[in-house]
Image (tube, rainbow, N blue to C red; front, side, top):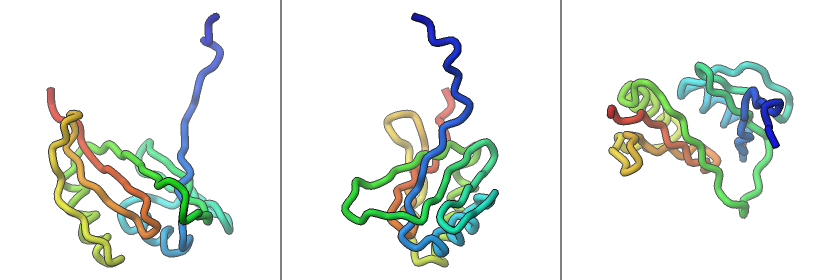
Length: 122
């Protein structure tokens, strides 16, 4: 059976927010553009990457993790480290990972883990 007619256009993750207003300010500060927002959902974009921030959080649920591939991990780290510090969040420098990416980890105000990285050459 062929699935040629089943073409995905885009996948978007729903990212939880314990404090919706704080999280919206955080994501705008670290480099995402707010495309639109309702009272309980906000759409953020940077380049072709987009996610939906939701005013919903279950404390005991499994954690959410996101991966963002960028073209200059050092520039992102320098920017994010400064901006995240305004929210009381420390960000360690990028490291080379065994899966061929140099990345850094970031926990947002809700505890969502972001890995922001750049593929290694070769």
